[in-house]
Amino acid sequence: MGKLTKAIGVAGAVAGAAYLSKSENRKKTKLQFNKVINKLGSQYVKDWGKPEEIDDAHMVDEGAMTSVQYYNEVQQESQDAKSK
Image (cartoon, rainbow, N blue to C red):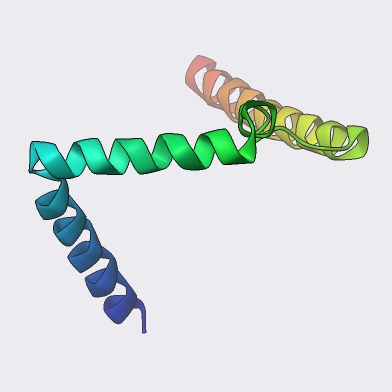
């Protein structure tokens, strides 16, 4: 199933690139995209990717710190092994 998904994705990307290779099609696509953005509202689009709740933001912050702590521990162990 994974190979089929990849093949479909690559075929879609190639078709999209072929479609957007013409200047006229790029202009049409950009115009449609701008219409969608205007309908959604600029404030909604500006907030894409931001957590909506404080708890979500805190959870993301904790996750980020966990990976940083892990990286620091690995670096420290590597330095300790080199110094011995």
